[in-house]
Image 1: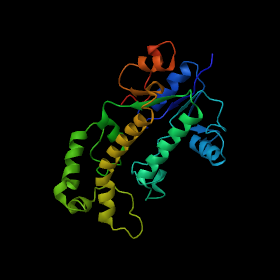
Image 2: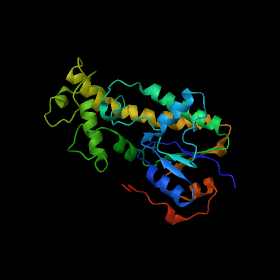
Image 3: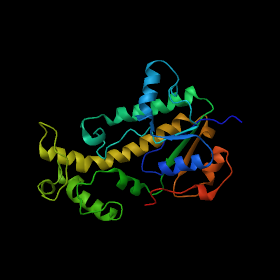
Image 4: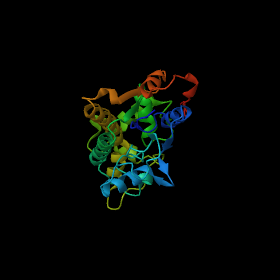
Length: 249
């Protein structure tokens, strides 16, 4: 029987490997992130630039996972590895939604899995660069927020609490050329948290709006719960043993 294409379009650090494995265990030809040593987005961008369907160069799969999330650095203005340090967050979100729209348009029978988390702080902790390495974000989130308030709270001024930026234990990428250390420290350590909150909200709301007239094409799938909604959405026999989160923490 004809199987629709399936695209996992939620953020990274939200069971993307488990979703790939789940689909593979149900017989779907599934790809995660890379095809022939090139990122899937490079193939998709090439096809779109040439006026071809988005999957023209990677057409052999049923399911595509972990290829759309545009923030590959824990500093949202950085490229992967922070090689460039001034990427536009809003443009990245716009590009992400544009690609989701193109996939929906080019493949009208396709389905979209938006993996999400009920434990939003856990996701935030997994994403953000940690300026305070003595605080393990995933297990010490409350203490992390206390430190954040001390250094970045509303009463600390436009560049935060200068005491924090002079702390020799502070962990920080080297500031871009011509940018003062205090300004860069405030940007990385203070602005990342509200920016990742914005990213999460913009991705969820943008995809929800896109499919408001076709809600049957998208599943918002909280990864902490049962995998049965995912089985039902894909139209496969439910097998609880097929759902194994690779990074249970």
